[in-house]
Length: 166
Image (cartoon, rainbow, N blue to C red; front, side, top):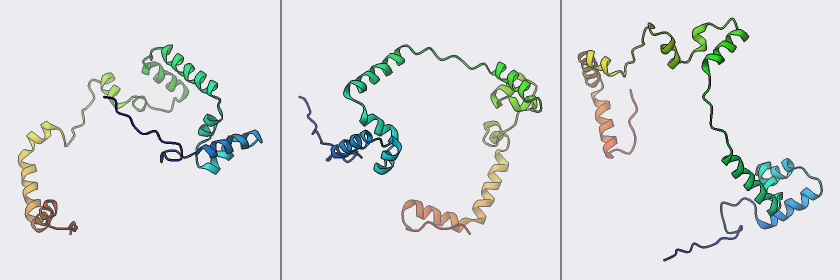
């Protein structure tokens, strides 16, 4: 069973910014020598939209075929050579230090002995400092007991207004 969706005219389609009368007016204004940008400002669309509506059906078809052809003949993407980029950058800007040229990922690759920065969200940090974190959390909960109770009520939907932190 085939589902048939209703066909809307340009006037009925709420997504359309330009109506059929507007398109005819745009074509007339362009014939009179007005620029795409000035027409676009009046209709609150981009100059590319104006350009599109000024194309003939044959030009639209040819443009679409060219886009498909470009996609088919596109060269595979070549990986970027970061080493050559860094060397060129060093020659152009000798005042830039070596570490400023490298990304965070490549820094470790080129400096295996570099000191690694520990993050607080790191699992090892959490395991190592579990008792300290637990004590701080407990102190916070004791200090802000009323606020946490109000927040719990608010999350459950019993209160309409979110409590502010004091």
